[in-house]
Image (cartoon, rainbow, N blue to C red; front, side):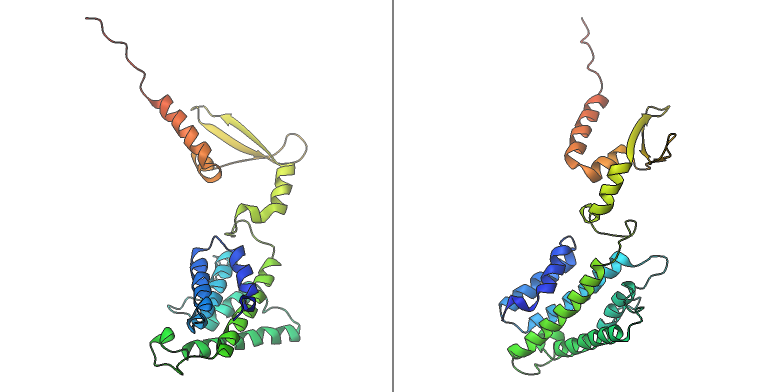
Length: 248
């Protein structure tokens, strides 16, 4: 057995290190793989399904969702939805369509291997006492091919910052453009509350967009240590002033 059988899965899971369910499933795959257990077939299937879920959740448009709505979607339904949300099914090249079709067949075969893996799968009696190392390798290679295929297609997409669940650091190119041309301005309103404005590029008078988030939310999202420092200062300011002791 060799960890080189699933480099694409490792890369995908490293990219989505902030997706807890995917990380738990990947840990199960590594554990069962290192123990030479047939349960790694179950885990490989689960990783593919988690990968599809992550991509769909990150790219699906809530106004026109593609995510399967069935109570227990079939394995192939998740892959089909992932292919659609990546807009791979709209490619006109016939050879590419055949490639997508072969990946669908891989998922079916992987599911068959999973169902025949014995008690680790559905409580059934073992198809055989122990699957051969070749069957485990086939399952892992198929799973890795699918995840690699989806991940590389995802990386080629231009992400929507409104819908994306990717962290701020993944938008470096667009972050740099905003930081180079947009400014930030603050003022106090009539009630003494701070108002923050984004100053857009252009000739004066420059257009501005007011940030709807209050100061506490900005601090909480951007700098937790600063949040604590500001909170302590505000609590101190809010504390009642000490009263002078009365002279008897």
